[in-house]
Image (cartoon, one colour):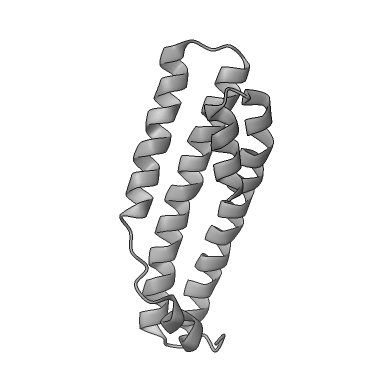
Length: 120
C-alpha cells in the first residue's frame, strides 16, 4: 500500500521520501472514512440496519487507520527535521498502537454491505 511505501522509506531512513506517500495514504484513508460514513447514512435511510452497522464499524476502523497514518507522517516529518529521538519514537509508538487497534476491528462481511446497498 501507499502507507507501506512511506513506512518502508522511513525505516530505510529516507525521511523525505516517506512524507509524500504518507500524505497520499492519509488523504486516502480520510476519503474512505467519509465514503463509509455516507454509506452508513444511506443504509440507515433505506432501513438496512445490518449494512449501516457494518459501515459504521468500517468508519471506526478507517478513522483509526487515518490516525495511525497521521502518526507515521508526524514521525517522518519529525525525523526529517532532526527532532529528538523521544519525539520521533512517541509518534512511532502511537502509529503502532493505533494500527493494532484498527487491526483488531473486524468488518465481518463486506459482501453483505455491498449486497444491502445494491452494489453487488
